[in-house]
Length: 158
Image (cartoon, rainbow, N blue to C red; front, side):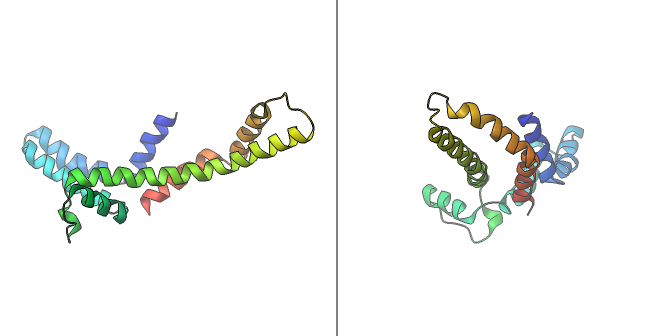
């Protein structure tokens, strides 16, 4: 389910990029009207423009610093070998931030359940036994999957 959700959210947030790749790169390549090198250049142009809009500039600057290259004045001059890792690191940064905000309420539930059980003197009952159903119920009540999906989509679209 999570892999399916990831694939369809990726297609959704990319908007017209898959369509543009299909019509300007893949179809002409399959028809033989463009060469493989031209297809790669076209795909690079389309994907680079999309990724550049979503990259954290500090991450891109750090990768250029590590590689020993100078950051180009024009963003379109960024090599694909540096663009892809910068994009992936920017997305991972967002993913960890989102995971933190999902984790905090669950941690609070764990702490509350453990405190209640300890104050009642029920030290032999593992707190996870009580807190897991509460966390699942909380996730369902706040419509967690929709919130996560919308948050991820908005982070890329905006």
